[in-house]
Length: 201
Image (cartoon, rainbow, N blue to C red):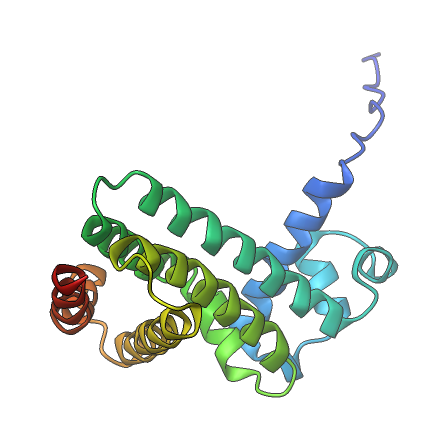
């Protein structure tokens, strides 16, 4: 007789790790089939859990999508801030932060395309990402043109963030445009003006 192998106890997955797994699976499935066409059961199957587990963690399918956006918002701020923080000049801060933005979107392309395609569901959450990036960019600009009134800094930041977003959309349509090229196109116009203002200041 051969001894039977008794299975050991299943490892309990920590809550944070389980939520990360669920969000990863949701982004993948939503990206493949479209948010409206995906059921919570399909997401659960991809993760390997029961459907009630998804509801326990996120409450609803919309809650799951918004959790994915919230994670992207946090990750985006981290990578842009890290790139800008490593720079040694205001120009390098803006260039590095912009390049980090485009490279992040490259790594998270399915998620970004999903967020942009789900108008109505994601509008508020995406606007929060824009506001976050605008505030961060305005702080970078303040280092280049000290003494500038906050409203003007915010206006410039709105222009830059809007331009980055449109460049991101364009890159989604033309994959031949690299993150480095998109950064250069932005700097060609934006930094010329800011550098002139800096000299006048």
